[in-house]
Length: 484
Ligand SMILES: *Cc1c(COP(=O)(O)O)cnc(C)c1O
Image (cartoon, rainbow, N blue to C red):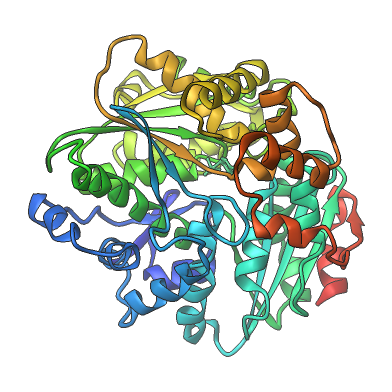
């Protein structure tokens, strides 16, 4: 298997080299040269497997790594359940896949406990240099990446987060990170400022020169090493529904995904391209509904007001991974992708052709604002006794709205964070009480809902604040160089 760049298909690498490289030097994203095809026999063979075994069968379609199963077993050993990604039944045909049983309580752990291990496998390609991971985060990536890379030999990790735009809990999780190889810094601006700043570092020759003792890489969701582990849990959800006798092998399933940078839902699209029987992919956005508009009109317009919402990990105007979808729907025309991306960076806008729009028919899209999301948390708790976080609530709300139109296909709402990670808003949604102090809110949420307070949260209350750095958005290079 080779991976190729979305902006120049002659630019190709092995998957492990692409994991190391992160983004292609032409600015494009690495995508599989072709999608390995699976059939019903393959799906049947997954039925008796544990999560790491199943994931290794799926990822093995891309990565030729001898001890892949062992690597994945280790990666998921820090999860608080053997099932890794349990499926919770809400109704006869609506299920919730909980992707937040890892060390940082968000779905990013599904990939970021794996990525450092893939990086280790890729070190022979780094020419003996240490690997320097540069990452911008809208909140959850940062902590998950820090946790995954902390004290991993031969690596250093730098995380930039927007000073306004992550929750108190997310911030605390990051600034208390241990490990001599970790550096956490807030950026004055929003997530797009942080992400653009990091992209500029990767493109800067001056920076490359100054950091020449390191091999630069990224832990952002543009890294193929993030995408591949995410493909696996869509197979897992499907197989779980077969095990629960909800479907037979070959039947279709829909997925509703709370979407930001488009990585999670793109993995579902990849699973479908490989042959997993998926009906619809329902793309859920919050008030930052640039994707909803894109799926409805074929126009991508980032020139719009940016809203801070109660689902901050989805507060994004430029969904980087959408580039990989564009590549597929234009028939893998690298010139076309490069020109659309140029339009986006120059004008903040692009429009796809009618032909390309036809390739989007597998998607449905909708958005839910804060009011709707909070009402959904309350309603799901009262009706089913099940607590969801603000991001999952956006997806559930969008799914409920979609289901009104009569699609009876079994659906899986992809749940991306523990309700305790966005605790003040969840508490407010369920009880009407507003408590900003996260630990008080968490204890109260646990009492009022009879749900367990995760250990990861209680441990934070007394953790020492280690990282106190702040940077202007134009000065990220200085910040990194100061650290290394
Ligand atoms: C990152 C994140 C998302 C968005 O996922 P993308 O892959 O960026 O679309 C949604 N919810 C939570 C809790 C997240 O951490």
